[in-house]
Image (tube, rainbow, N blue to C red; front, top):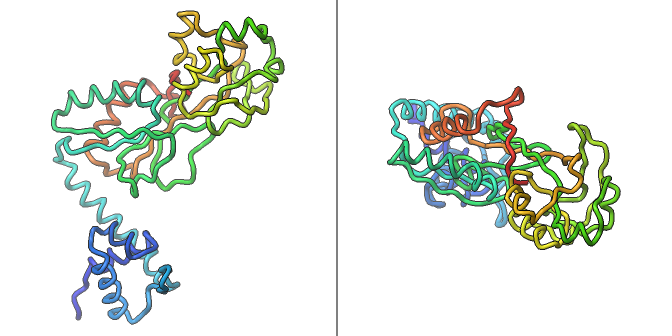
Length: 309
């Protein structure tokens, strides 16, 4: 009986996942020539064609897909068993890579990292600022924080909602003096607005119930709440922000809360991770500090704290 070359099977799975020999080789951490040779050996051994190859693309065959569907879960389980064995005695060290929106990072991730690094001197952390939902595996992140008004994009990653963000409406006193204080959401029609990149409608809630909504065409769009806050204090328009983020400007009299009886639809912050179990010690340590820092979660697993939106 011929010896089974398990590395060839693993490379085959990676080529399927990467949809190309180049990407599959990167995922398997082997040269492209080695990936091609591994798949060829496997095809000869099995007597079946696993991929249809053209000059432009590589497509897995029906038989290849059937084999992948059976084999890939076995390799995933083997990797988890290996990670579990290592994590039992694993020291919290190495580099923890995190992706986060700026506002989440500055107000909440920063104090968590301070505690984490004090507890674990051998640990290093890399924090990248992004408002997009990254591919954790492809981009090499251990954790990613994502803000959304609805839910997450389709994702095979484990996730947990950790923060719900209250939002209100704010403007400079000079803008209020020029236009008068609005009493209802409808009176904001025609006002200059400052929104994020995806703002198409603003919702107005009383006691958590939506009572009105308004189509918006902001004069300035930016994902950065910091820029929207500055523009609002300069009198350029009404901004939708977290009350906590705007608090200093409110205290200094540089901003006024518009329609204070109303709030807007909350933002939700999720933390994503590649797997719920058998995670690296550094990820477990971070999540432990995060849970202690953010407080008690509600029945839906979310913490009510006012961070920027």
